[in-house]
Length: 62
Image (cartoon, rainbow, N blue to C red; front, side, top):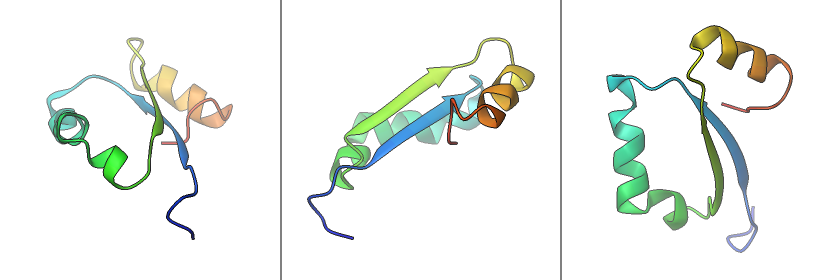
């Protein structure tokens, strides 16, 4: 894979203390460092069921 390729990632989350590492990654710029310049983070307030539906419909990748 070439370093100059843009990588896109649809990342769905249900806010929880377990996502503290995600906020550290965002704050320290690691997404940008590894060429993940187009990370779309969407919070699913409806919980894991809502997130699972988005995953099954292809609206979120992780």
